[in-house]
Image (cartoon, rainbow, N blue to C red; front, side, top):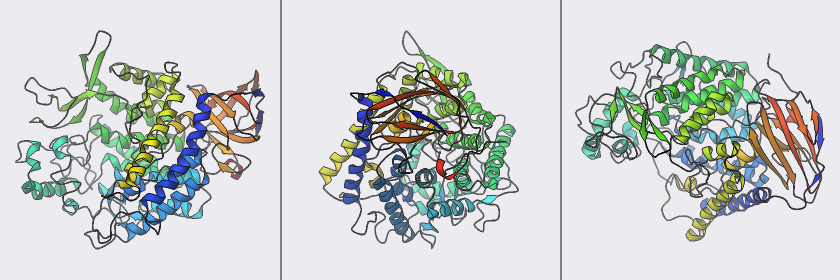
Length: 636
């Protein structure tokens, strides 16, 4: 392994380096307080309560601590990993003791019994983060293989039809796809008080005239009837999130059957998209026929074009293409999500917004003509106030801070994909050289475009501002804890998620040059990753800060600073999973040719080193294994 030594003295560490180390410390103490206040004396979450019956909410509980292993893997204290393990085991116990209307528990064999991959994608982020944090944990590896095994062709639960290459239900899991009964959800989350009224009625051929009719509880029975007829069976694009479960198993084992599952299932959806004229259909029957349960229509499915639209449709193609690129090195897979984004842009409408820019409003939904009057602020409307409908497309709105466009560029490093993001950003009037400290920690929080502005040299203060915002968000959560002084008065399935004090986005961007993973089921994709060589653990060593200052198609610029009192040695790996390779590394006027996926850096106390690294991307077989536990495996 090529060895580099920092020789530049640092008398006063820069603000970003100090804030970064302070954030790691703050997160540790915040988690200790969080566990003390929001778990019971046995260390279990307070939800579901005793006697609760239902099918929804397990993912929300896990979201309360899903990112703690990720922050540990970036350099956080080991307590983050320990607390996460304990919380997850407790959540599994609570879920396995909570009944559903079907006569079995909410969690069966440590996996949700039958749910959609919007929610299971969220909950399984913990599973993937544990791979980064603790790949040598036998329980973590065993679960990875067992969970993936639920979707093998010969699994007893019949989630997957290998011959037709389709997942057999929009909801699936450890009990299979046949426990999908929308009436079992009662009034929440799919009843009359849910988002149907704000999203609009998905189908125009029912007896209802407008979405407001669904606010009448008398119509719930009919709503559930239609949902069960049209949305309870067959495949949907969200099921492409299963590829993350398979990729996770591959990263642990290197077993080719997981890689083959990913590429074969992705190819099946690309074939359906080609059959549908280039637009991905949102529902496929168990026979393989598009529109089998929707009267032959390619839209109108669960989480489809006529309900959540692109926000939900874009998840599966993006996640699956990322996983396929990681596993094969072939970036052609990205043409799938790229084609969908281009189709939306092609059907967009430019609207004059100021003297400098026009704003492109792209359609987010597709459906039959009719009354689309619903609460859809920020979208184009007709003269009478109705939502604009044109050639099937509707809900035209700006495409701001789109994570799918960002991930497309990040995986391809293609100039055209990068320029598309600039055009989408510039069409809007928002100031992208600021960070909102109130932004949420979930999808669409608004910092991806600001980060890209930093990489473009337009926002030099971004590292300080995103770290400042992260501190502010932690303190906001701590203030809630102080005000509540223990368990909240009203405990629901969201209580942990809404109070989680750990915010990782800025740390990912700055230390690993990585965007927020696609929140609803994507894996971490990164330029570099750090390991503490002395303590043989993942993450930056104590006292060390890292800043990825540039990301281009050639490689990355990285600065490392040891602001601590002791000499530190770390390993810098190319890619989150060693999938990239260092072609050349330039520092202090010297050029090195490591021709491997890792370099060793010696950092005496009070020193810094800046590296410019040329990367060959996706040339190595990806793995969770730590650098000292494996040898480099170059792809054939």
